[in-house]
Image 1 (cartoon, rainbow, N blue to C red):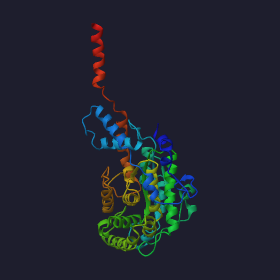
Image 2: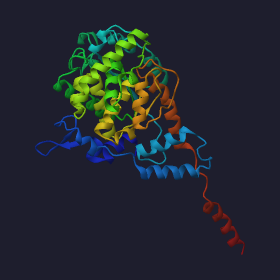
Image 3: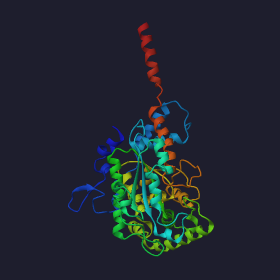
Image 4: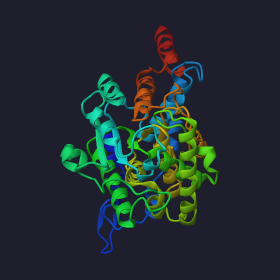
Length: 396
């Protein structure tokens, strides 16, 4: 059975992410009363039994153990995630980019002017952005989900703005980025997008962001969740910033931390206080993808921050995620990935974001899947001896 079929049929309510509402009826999680504790129950680890079967099959290929390096580990991970030996080749990947503007960008913490994330979105839609070029070259469809761009909705296609929660997120250093109701709506939107992609048969998701000020919000989340100082996680951003801008960004993260620490125990409240609509949606997306047993390649520091928060909600969830690359100049990403014990697949000095690192890592994952699927097994010794024994018996 293919990956989409297993997710839809093989796991019952677990695969479909169904929970019981107040009347006892089974409904999709994205439509039920939101209880983050449900994710801890619904998310299971990839199958350890299937991984052992994949290891045994790898041994039977006759190749020297570990001779394929990281590709061997990726093949085993895919087998466990798919519950399939041999692995099913990755045939339907999809890049999903969540977009939003952050009010904190008004403090000049970014090289881009505040409220201009729509220009990044427009470049991808026009096919001229780096992510669009690479996705087109790789034959990977992409989807943009506007959560809080600071522009009129009618400036963008309806399918892009369908889930928008608000126009821009609040300035996290002095006010909440979102109301509690907006945070829940954004989180549910991310869940709904993950459900839509799983239902459509997507077998590998690539997650990125298109934002201005998003790395500042990510820095606050990572510092709060790791219990570290602002200076440890403050990076240089997708477009490199100078030292003065870095100091402003560090101060903004420090001020955001003061507002984040009192609400660390309530993850939705934390997203409302210092996250933003795009980060809330990405967190919901990651967790629901894990519920649906659909693996995800993370891109940069923003997706890493959301993944770290997702781990706080459901500790088994990171087993479904890979890190596409090590983002240059983003110590917060390294901190988050280390906490989740996830090692980046690539280190190419990228700082651009926008899903580019995840796209570059995709061929590596596809190669691992192809090798795990297509390398033939050597005949067993018993199979080789059987003809010889038969021949000897006939001779007598």
